[in-house]
Amino acid sequence: MLRLLARRLLFSVLTLVIASIVVFWGVELLPGDVATAYLGREATPARLALMRAELGLNRPATVRYLEWLGGVLRGDLGVSLALRKPIGELIGIRLRNTLFLGLTAAAIGLPLALALGVVAGLTRDRGPDLWISSLSLILMTLPEFVTGTILILLLSIKWPLFPAVTTVPPDAPLKAFLPNLVLPVATLVFVMVAHNLRMARTNLIDVMTSDYVQMAMLKGVPRVRVVLRHALPNALLPTVNLMALYIVWLIGGVVIVERVFNYPGIGTMMIQAVYDRDVPLVQAIALVLAGAYITFNLAADLLTMVLNPRLRSMRG
Image 1 (tube, helix red, strand yellow):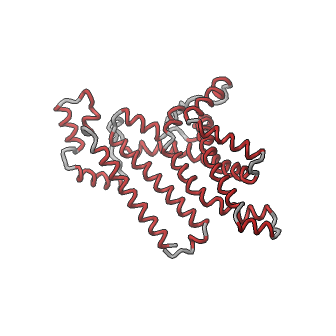
Image 2: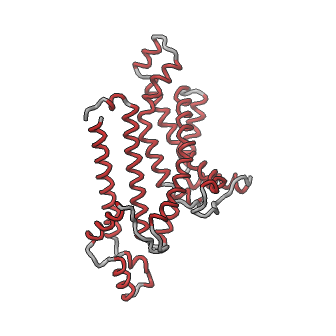
């Protein structure tokens, strides 16, 4: 297992390095350069020359990439062109807000998805299963912005129970976000539950119809014990990776939800950075999101090893 773990860690590091290359060179290969993109219509030969000298754009791209990567390894992501502040400080605040939103939704949505998936799987083709499956299909067909808009219309306009948009400053204490968190979290939970419960349901049905479960029930083992001791652990294994991917989506792909509710997270910052042509900030956010994706995938692999005795006994 140690060899397998070492390979996973090495593969994650290599993937992150490749992601840094793609992020840097993807921007580098775009028409123009950072100075041209930032100055836009105000670009004059003199201003372009001054900004290129200030940003070191006259040096070879490989040298700049190595310096940028070295700064990232030291925790220095550079300075935002638009805000003139250290990028690490700016991203730290916004990432905190996005993590608070995403992990709150995950803490509610994942257990709820598992519970509903188990209920649907154990009542296959009966009333509870039909209701749960039908509701999940409806929620899966609704884009996030549609779900968010419906919630705003119902719970902010028709019945003014929760704020429609977030007016709290990005650097406010987390407790100040709580009243504004209800509708964004509900939107994310609906999407997460709709997808994950179907995976849990399908896996549980497959396990419950397997030979060893049927044999255990024929031998008189109580159904509750069969479900809790044998069916559920095996049914949850294939769901782990999918749930980890949805947590990554919650961290990096909630741009639409943050935009709908004006939530000051990293997704909103990414949109604003693109609008401001703040290339260093866009690069830094893309690399941070890639790192989050890789980290959670690695965590999913490790959790799968812990839950699966056969993987724990592997020697590599």
